[in-house]
Image (cartoon, rainbow, N blue to C red; front, top):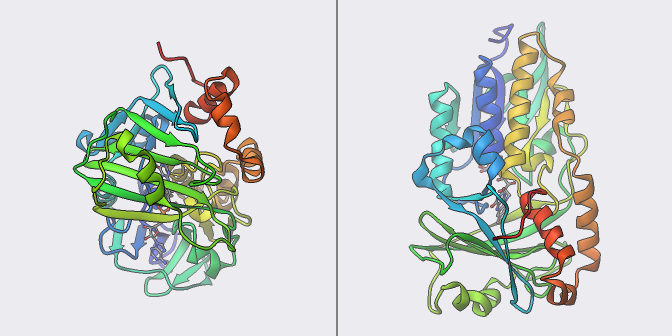
Length: 372
Ligand SMILES: Cc1cc2nc3c(=O)[nH]c(=O)nc-3n(C[C@H](O)[C@H](O)[C@H](O)COP(=O)(O)OP(=O)(O)OC[C@H]3O[C@@H](n4cnc5c(N)ncnc54)[C@H](O)[C@@H]3O)c2cc1C
């Protein structure tokens, strides 16, 4: 518990997605009074993630407790060159989980409430100001009161970062995704990835089976001067039939959003306030996978706040910086891909040993192996 009643909350977290939930749950385990505010009325609405979990997140975090009915196991990757020649990749014991993401988000909110976290939906963070009391410095959050610690887990365009004068994300991918409820891929056990400078400059297109249907999307490097949206319909027209998505199929929903791709922001914290997850830029610059890193960092921040309040740890502002991944080699790869991406090497070298090796590094984190 807080050392002083001057504080209504030990910790206020803005955002009830992966980073915010992890932070709140870890802090609550340490006995803190935690409030999470989320601007959506339903955490399962207006999603901007495909929701694919890497094996590490699915096994080594609390996400391992997601009910089985909300996940679908994918054991291989089908990588398509721009010519649509394809390469099958898999690694022993490695897999991804696609998810019924709306219900995973609702499950997370329920888990927080069961743990004793106060979750306030339909409450937007608007502003906050530093305050101090006899027991130390903290923040007054508009509409919420005084908190010893404020954590911004409010995504790539973080308002907490802006109001607290912290670093903000400058480099983005932009991703857009169609959902086809009830649809089924011809090969539902594979994550299908399309390399194409024409449709997805700076990233890839993808298709994945989830427990309730199919997700089909693509992302490209966001440039302030670039006009227009990614041509998701063009890519779908080119590859849909091969995947088993027949012409005439209409998307039941669309997800879209910015994905940080430039590494962690600086400064990531200031006295009493910390950024985590996308708000902190903690997303792999190459794979654009952010759920596992958001979860890990959010959890580390929550634990650090609890340890510090309990007199057992360093200031959490410092711990948050130490826990942030550097992504050094991935930032270098991102730099190179942004400048030198070409289609022909993928067409020519798709089945070569170096390209297979590189793809296995990216997808399976060095556990690659030729399928039998
Ligand atoms: C199209 C797309 C597909 C992706 N697919 C994957 C994938 O398959 N696997 C993967 O690992 N990563 C994926 N990512 C990246 C991943 O989704 C993010 O890195 C991850 O969701 C980050 O979690 P977060 O909690 O930091 O932020 P977010 O998930 O962005 O959540 C921020 C939360 O804060 C709330 N919020 C924002 N502002 C306020 C405010 N002012 N007041 C109150 N609440 C606020 C929002 O409503 C939201 O709930 C994808 C991203 C995109 C855009």
